[in-house]
Image (cartoon, rainbow, N blue to C red):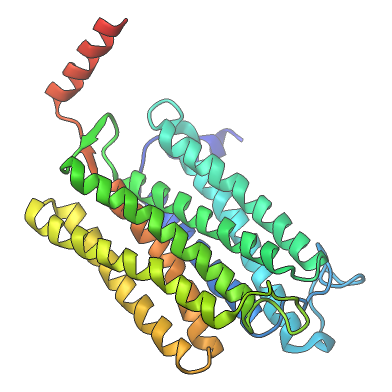
Length: 313
């Protein structure tokens, strides 16, 4: 036990950074495999939970490709559990020096078993569309948390101050809200169409064509706001903000292109799956943009803040 404790990092190092990258990638990959489950009608490939069948923990050859796809998605959930533990162990000694990393890894780690249980309930309720949607939202939240963890791993510890004008920060926050609305409407759109979960799964009863157009409204608002962020970042000349704003624009252009193609080609499963993966990537990139709005506070700013606190006391 003493050797294990001694092996644990006492500062942010390469192991922490590598695990943080893998952790985020696995969270996005879970969205991809979850999409594969839905798009191949494999949601009930394992008809029960936590076992795959009443008599087997794993899928059997008789269950065919659907059982293989569903069980593969569950296995990735197990991998995420291991990554959550590893991420926590790499920062467990940093509670005092980096409490942000400690609590981020702790909360994200709790989200993994919650996601697994929610997935089990989804299966046991025969893939009710709104539970499938809640399952997806939970994945988005975990993508955001692991993105914050990754960005903070590279950040300089200590107080931070806003590094952009107030109007730019406000625009970024509004954009993040609209991104969230876009994702929610995407879930509702999927719940009305052919990929709601399974052939026998009841849809939400909304008209797919109408809700698809409604979903496009916040998507285009997001794109317009992102253009403002890109132009503003170019004028502000803050490197992290400019880099993440351009990355956000690139993800959105890909997302819009895939969305237009899939809506005009009968919603092929492959494109819908790519669209879902890009949604997770969009959530991660938007999170990085918001986090880039601050920078390590200058010594005089820290001193001024301490003085204000003293006067208030």
